[in-house]
Image (cartoon, rainbow, N blue to C red):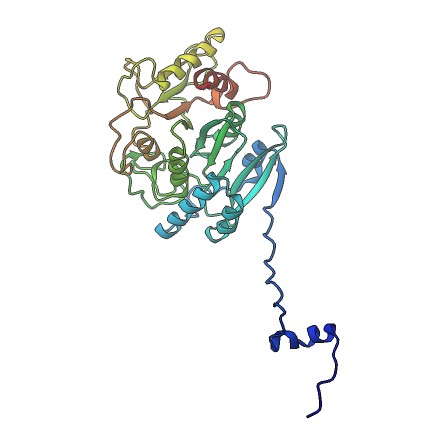
Length: 357
């Protein structure tokens, strides 16, 4: 038999003979594709939620109810996101119709946030986390269209208080006609009856509610402040001392001690209002007769106050409540840009004086 012809090492490598004949070489390592980078966006967050972020409109049936499977997957996504595992959160968000972005807020000193936004509009919310925040509070706006300007205000309050979390519903509360399974009635969408499934403040089978519960559970010091707007009949805004600037609640009409946060914030807000003779704030937990819009059927408030079945059952314990339901007249929630004496900055000062570490 004739001997094999002499081959160079390079030729052996090219022909694969070293590997095929067990010649002592190793197969080339498997190359792991690089992780896809989280998209970056530079924008004024206040302008973004006001003019760029899309919203499902009233009466369109455009709100899409997530399945229980998707709600569970959203919870898992939030576990990663809140733990700072942003790459993992980014990779799993797409399957839930979300994109995780790194948003540079040009209206707030280029502060960086991580935000979940919908890929296709389904009315399922917009959520941001500021990992540099030392205040672990959550600013929530469930009715950005019905409660005029609360989407814009929520960003202002987040910035001014240094809050870590922001949630803005992307659906009008009356977008769908189907009823929510949760208790409570209203006439805001027409005839008196149950809340609608598209009402982010009254539906537990919603990403908006799940974001709130996950944020609450991640820390024993997180305070959730949910901003609402109330109309002229319950919160007059005539720019005089007869105005009811805000109605604050811990989710109950029960009288609570003066050192409970809801009463402390009410007093701090009244201290801010006092020099201007432009009205007063009321607490649902002070011994007064005028107790309206106290948020007792709000499921997130019920959950924060310790109710394990918040869809149907009211909370029963409010000691040390970490829930603030804030109904506001038009003057308090709108900054008209002329340096008016009552604006979201008035609320910010009161919050900072109450919740300062």
